[in-house]
Image (cartoon, rainbow over all chains, first blue to last red; front, side, top):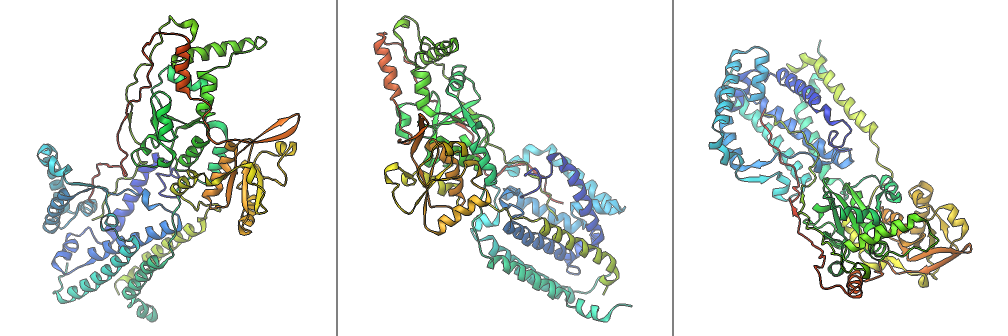
Length: 196
Length: 220
Length: 205
């Protein structure tokens, strides 16, 4: 069966409609998990709330295990899935910038839009900031071009670059996730509760 | 108001979920592995390969070459030795053994050109065609009868008998003209110039784009 | 127990996810006929002439002849002790059962058709499904006065040296050496296939 759209089970014209539906579901789940609160999001950096870590790591592991089971059973062909290309230095620097923005503003781009939807003023300012950033980036693109398209490594995955069996990698990741949750709980108990 | 037993069970919810994860992930490691087989459904492949749709006749092929149709690539699946001896104008040599060599397969795995596979007969070409079709390569054709048929009909067309219909004579003169194009000389046309085939521009092959994939939105 | 106040939401989510898994499992159908040999191995097999056999060597009790022509042709004439399985019906259950049994009994199956080319599709299909006890009989069948005539032929034999023929014809025509229409094989420019499509994507959430 494979991925539904590339294999023509769902016609390609539907992809924007499906994108909207998935987007609505994603926004709903972000909001109902409380991720439209900047305090909750920033909590993971200050150590009083690890909901972000737990939710996203769990989601990642569930998806990972699910996809590989589906691949094993023949529902899905992992080889046909899109792999995001890696631009090493661009990713590192972009990641640092985003991390700083995350701690300082208490939102990441997706949750900021979620928070705008429920009318948070800080989120509106945050989104304006994003827009200004986008504007600066596009206006000065020639300056960043080398960084943006340089150190291109192709559509690689950890499985390709480490050369290990994906199944072992998943197993190791599951263990890492569980350890991370235990540690997060432990740290969360030590830190003074902040009420928000 | 809240069931006490439920509360008791749910207080262990995190260890339970962690255990489920570990069991599922461990299961992936322990499951017996099997080699994944790529390709279209065997039934479909059989239907395609028993139908004569893939064949292209030598007359059609001569027409294509003489008209210098730029949308065709000719692929010779014989070995290199026979390829050097004689092949069709502008043919590419992909010996059957190296069919899936990385730098040769791009002639086959593309959707821009029509590819005509040929060999001496159509035995090897058919085999190559079936394998390529299993892997969903598109626009592939096979020269019916291969180069032997090419020799018998185009290069050395049989002179029709007197009691054959007029069409056969027309066909013969068309084939004769074609054979002159491919370099065969006839005594009566000694004076005539044989036009050398004009060099066709090298074709640029754009490989098949992998079907569109949804750009992923990374979660945060 | 803050989560328990949201039991409704939790149970709805749980029911939906279980439903999705159930629907997935119920619609799951493993295709009945699957390949067992990949394309690269098949290439190796078919470039080694082991799988071809000529008419002289078929007198072996372990050899079973299978005629892949249609029933009409088969009835007109066929080799002795041959079984008729039309090439286009080779994947039908009962026919696959025959092949399975022959494989279990360690028999070698010889496929033949009007000519060797006709035996290729069934051979290739069955080989890729994992039947490695097949051979193609390199014979050509024709009729002479309604009697089947079976001839050995050589696979992919070149009937004539075309270049030599062209040279010969030029010599015969006594044409002055003129621009010999050379076979121009221009190396074509190719853009290598990228394994995965690169697409500028906006990441981040």
